[in-house]
Image (cartoon, rainbow, N blue to C red; front, side):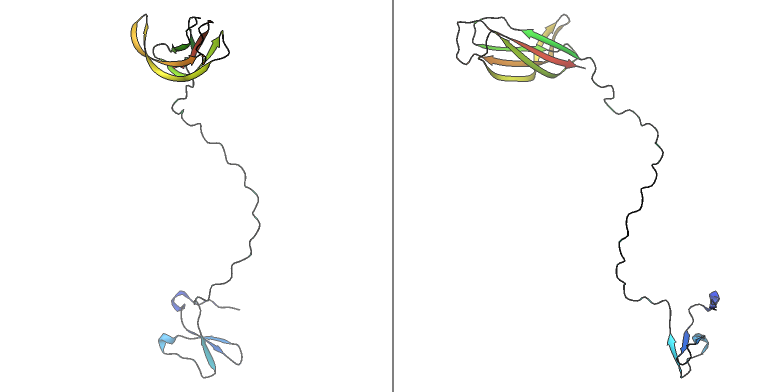
Length: 172
């Protein structure tokens, strides 16, 4: 049976009798010492670091937690508002170079654009891009966001009529 030392006696010196394996605890601070046939021993000393233990398999996944509350709406939560497609069709003539734009209405932004030619299948596109243009509507002049297309007949022939339609996709 092992007897625990009272708190005030812990950390006292212990002695082991070699012949019989009997443990005798003494109070070295009170002048007690080992007998000739005993060996001093002490606890609470760190030994060398032991080897790393074996890896064990991962346990089963725990249950899913409860769903948290709905978060606040972030910026741009409205999505695409005021979607509109506007277009401009050039005159059908024999001029070899055409540059036209389709402008978004006041207060809207161009988000995409494109073009289509008519009267020819041999043409070269020098540009298809968004740009700001000076524009006038019923309320007066303003700077509009637009889609511009630059198209030419690479052979510069003037013996046929052709045209281009430009469109802009606009939204607020």
